[in-house]
Structure formats: C-alpha cells, structure tokens
Amino acid sequence: MRRLPLPIYLIIAYMLLAFGWWGILLLRKNEQAHIAQVNELAYRMAVQQGSNNEEAFRNTDVYQQLNKDFDRGQKMIVGEAIILILSLIGGLALLFRFLRKEISAAEQQRNFLLSITHELKSPLAGIRLILETFQKRRELKPEIQEKLSTNALAETDRLTALVNDLLLSAKLENVYDINEESLDLGQLIHEAADRVAMKYKSASLHVDIAQDVGLVKGDRLGLTSVAVNLLENAAKYSQPTPVIHTSLQRGGVKELIWEVSDNGMGIPDREKRRVFTKFYRVGNEDTRTTKGTGLGLFIVKQLVEKHGGQLELLDNEPHGTTFRIYLPTD
Ligand code: ADP
Image (tube, rainbow, N blue to C red; front, side):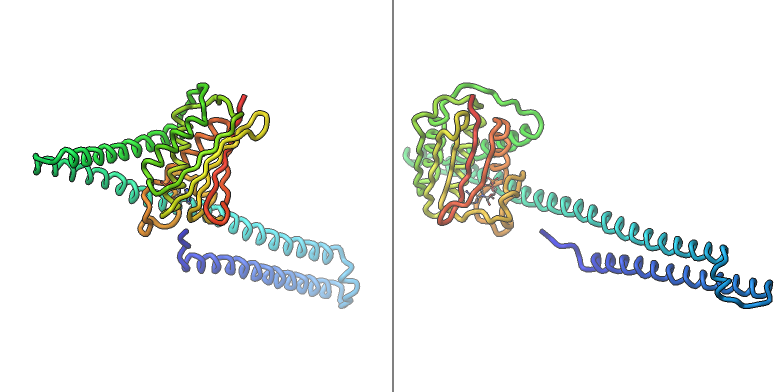
C-alpha cells in the first residue's frame, strides 16, 4: 500500500499545532481581559468609596460575578478547542480511510488491466501463430497438425475460461441464483482433479472422498468452478512439484468439510483476507510470474457463501496453503 506524501503529514501537524496555539492565545487574552476588568472595577470602587479595602472588594457580588464569567469563558475556550481538534482528527481519519480505499481500488484496477491484457493477448497470439503456420505450410505432417490444433483448442479454452470468470464474477455481485440439484460432490471433485491433473502434468493429486458423504444439494457449475479454481491455484502456486491433497468428509450431522491443501509458497498472514477481494493478486503485477486475474478466490468465496457455506484459509505444514470449506447439508 502506497503511503501519503510527507508534505500532507506536515500540513496536518501544522494545523493541529496552530489550533492548539490559538487556544492557548485565546486563554491568555481572556485572562488579560479579566485582569483589566477587575482592575477597572477595583479602581471605580476605590474612587466611589474613597478607600482601598481589598478584602471588602473581593467579597462584592460584582467581583464574584466577574470571576464566574472568567471561569466560564476559560472552560468554553478549552472545550471548544478540544471539540475542534477532535473533529479535525476524526475528519482526517475518515478522509484517510476513504483515500486508502480509493488508492487500493486504483491499484487493483491497474493490476487487473495489466493481468487481463496479458491473459487476453497471450492465447490470441498463440492461436494466431498456429493459424499462420497452417497457412504458410499447407503440407504439415498429420501428427504436427494434430498437435497444433490441440494447442489452439487449449488456447481457446483458456480464453473461454477467462471470459466465463469475468461474467460469473459480475453476476455474483448482482443476481446469481444457485441452480440447486442433487449431486455427487465426490464425483464432481474427482472430475475437477482429473481436469487439473491433465493441465498440470508435474502435479501429484490425491483425492480422498469419505464413504458416508452421500448426495449434496448444490449448483453443479458453481461447485465445479470452486473445485477447479482451488485445485488450479494449488498447482499454480506450488511449482515445480505440486503435491495436492483434496478431501471430502462429514463434519457434523448436517455439514460437510471439503479441504484442498498444497505444499506451495503459502499466503502471508497480512494477505489472507485480501486474496478474496476481486482482482487482488499477492505481490506486484510487474514482477509476478504466474498467470491469473485475481478473480478465482473471489468467485470461490462468493459461491461457497451462496451455498450457505463458509470458507477458511489456513497454513499447511510444513509449508503451503489449506482451503477448508464447510458446506451445510439437509
Ligand atoms: P489468480 O490466481 O488469478 O491470481 P485468485 O483469486 O485465484 O487469482 O488468487 C488470488 C491470489 O491469492 C493469487 O494471486 C495468489 O497470490 C494467492 N493464492 C491463491 N491460491 C494460492 C495458493 N494455493 N497458494 C499460494 N497463493 C495462493
């Protein structure tokens, strides 16, 4: 998070000191005015009575009233100064919070634009290259043709997945009704794991589904997206040799616990809440090497919550990350 420029802090410090100083000046002026009033009153009484009895003067109602007014004046100045300084600090704190949110939103947008441009450009460039190869060298061997078209299809899948993620995240923020059906979540996790294993050949994936899980009410597309996003992240952020475990078991009578853990780089404590924000990616987009848009975990969290579940992010031992989902069942 970027810090505000030093001159802003200097101006604020100056304003606070200036308010404090004005308060002290006002107190002094009030005191001087009071002394002048007392002196004038004492002088007038001495002239009227022809004597200068200080004791008698201090007992007069007029003198007592002057003292009361002075005390009230001092208290008012101190009270007003405290309220002014507190409201200034409160106002500035609110302003800073607002600014910090704006700055972080702008940073996220910048990260998003950089990553989305990259994610859109690289499959398009890949497909273009393959088409050019087909155009220039019409007599390609069948196995090369096969390989190139498989690559082109994989690139279009990548583009489709990206567009789907964008649409899904927009829908999740507005209207997304989960399409509930009775489904075999264990089977769904196996299928997602197979998809991810095909894509990340170096990953070793272990799926452990308990016998007593039974059928679950849920949105097939949504839960597939949860599984694929978590498993893909586990593979992506645990290179070069990802070891991924995913398990599904009964937690309580009406609850399932679904875990996905990896042996990767892990997520630092200070980032644990932020990774679920839309477009948020750990680190800086300019220096980041992994591909992604920062949409995956946002989508996962929203979908789990739409199913009435909860998502936890824990550290794995000795290193890596564990995502734990608590899903209610009927
Ligand atoms: P993306 O993977 O497209 O960047 P996500 O929303 O899926 O977006 O993840 C947000 C960020 O959280 C990632 O950029 C990454 O830094 C971090 N992250 C997610 N999953 C893992 C994981 N299993 N291990 C380490 N870091 C992770």
